[in-house]
Image (cartoon, rainbow, N blue to C red; front, top):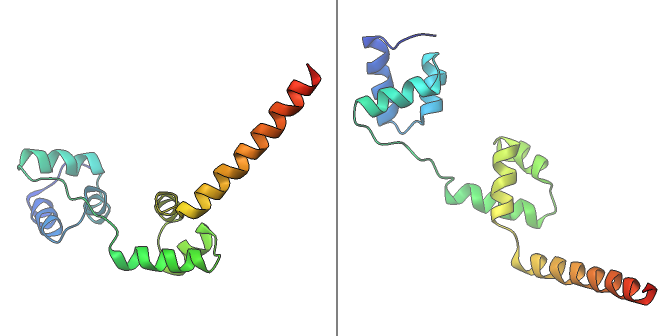
Length: 119
């Protein structure tokens, strides 16, 4: 892995135009992502931010509703588990979060009452 050649920069430009991220371009060219980052900055190109499209979110929500774990969902939709897990944590069901908070609050009160009773 070394400096980009003229052919590599042409290919990098094609991949950039196709919407590939620095990491994807680097993977396809066999170099490091920082190399692509610096090439992109030298040539005045903006970073490519790839957001998951609505269909992936819809699939995740559907599978979450069916009770699948994040690892199972990742396998089913063909995405890396850490990405799916972080998306799921950002899409927490507000009703479940409220219920969890209530349960945690009850546990806190019980412990507090026990401590007061001992004092």
